[in-house]
Every structure is written in structure tokens, then in C-alpha cells.
Length: 341
Image (cartoon, rainbow, N blue to C red; front, side):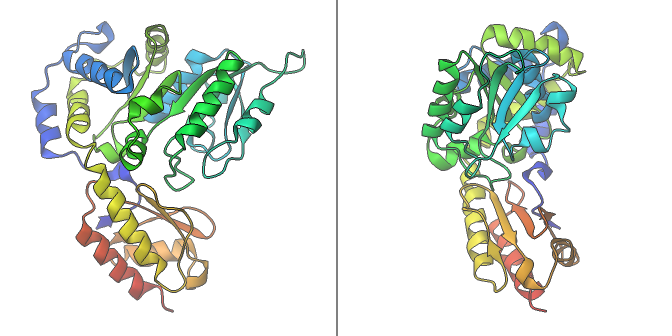
């Protein structure tokens, strides 16, 4: 099977398996796991933050950020199609007891003026706006990269109003490799940052959150409450170190493959590529193929290609470490034979 459903499906490399096997370990709740400590130190250094914390997933990292930054009854501004708002089981409301205030963006980027006007004034009837969240790259916008100028402007709005900013950077390294802007530069425009070691970086599990030492010290306690206080976790942190050391620069290969796939799909009658492909995600509209997204995906699966239903008319393809150029060529050949009715 050629699996283009998501970059979450990658298998750990041989180097990652070896790193897991040979990892020096200790009890991480006591902060005694040397492999985790090295991973957290390396992540903090890359992001230009004081301290970092290993968490089990990007969702857990985002939830911990809300719990750490906010108080119950606060309000959080975020983009209307953000992963936090759409795909995290209403965790902000259920766990942090905060209200989300979604703003419709353009390719995932909120207008700074819209953000400014969404901040609540002091009024007995209103919640306190305490946090702004951004997502880079933006999943539902097709892996779109937030312009650095947009992030700068929103961060300024936040600071002018004594508020914090959290960056859901699940695929931040994709944004960095594609744009040439360092992850440290992106992270300058957020008080806390989350990024996934899985997805494009290819580790089997885990994410990082980073911020000030005070923020991380508080976040560590929230992680414990959420059941994320693990023990000899070096066996999964080791592959995360390999991901940061070996799999960042190669993300460009995924972006090139995505562009080749998108260009090929755009030349197939009936298929419309809906997004501007900047990183590793392609969203296609299949309404003119005679298929529903469900029947299109089923037809591909029968011929060894996995893709994901992404809307009432759309299908998503995601390139990653385990998808080669040859896989892209085969996928295009299969789709060419699948679309005509």
C-alpha cells in the first residue's frame, strides 16, 4: 500500500529503532531520564526558548498550553478551522474550561485587525481574553505557511493587550524548510510553542512544548495531571532526537513530491487541486469525476493507494518519509485510470 492519508503513518527508521533500544533511561517524573533531558534541551535551543517539555502528543501539548496560560472562564482567540478548534475534542472547553472565539482566516492566517477587535473589553458581561492561538503550517488550509509578518502583527496585538500567544506548530519544521525562515524566528512571535516529533519528522510518538522556565515548570504539573508523567521515556525520546538530527532537512523531499503530485493531479480531467501547495498536503475536489470522496477513496484503496476523505467534495493526500518519487508516479497512474467513468 502507498499510504497518503497522513504524515502520521510513518514508520520509525532503523536509526530510530536503534536509538530506542540503546537509550539511556531514568524516571522522567523525577526528571532523571537523560535522553529526555537531552531532547528537551535540544528542542529549547532550536526554538530559542528557555525550556522545553516532552509530551505524548500535539493535542496534549496544546491542551497543556491552555491550562497553563488561562484561567477557567477565560476566552481564547483562534482561527475557525484550526486543529485546536476542529480536531481536539473540544479539549479547551472540557479541560481548561475556556471559551473559544473563532475567527475566519485567509489560508489559515487571521487578520490582525480582526484579532484586535475580538479582544474583549472590560465589561462585567464578558469573559477575559487571555490567549491567542496560531497554527503553522495550517492543516485545513492545506499545509499553508503563515506569513511571518502576520505572526509578528498578531503577536504585537497580543503584547499591546497584555496577552499571551501560543503557536500550534505541529508541522513547524515543514514551514521552516519550505520558507527558509528558522523555527527560532517563528517561535519569537509566540510565548509558547508546540511541535510534533511524529508527522513529517517521522518519530513514532511524541511532541514538544516550549516557553519560559516559569511556563514549563507550571506545564510539567499539568502534564502530570493529564496522565503524561511517564517513567523511562527515553525509549521514545531517543527516536525524537534522531528526528531532529536527521529528518529536518529531508522534509524538502516531501514538499517536492507533493508539488509533483499536485501538478499531476491538476492535469487529470475532473480533478481540481484546491490549495496552493506549499508543503506536504494536497487537497483535491473530486465532484467532477463522477465520484463522491468516499467512492474515490475506495476505488484508490482497491488499487493499493490510501487517501483520506476531507470534506463533502474533497480528498486529502499527504506526502511523507515513507512515500518515494516512484510512489508518486504510481499514484498518478492509478488515479488517471480511476477517474474516467
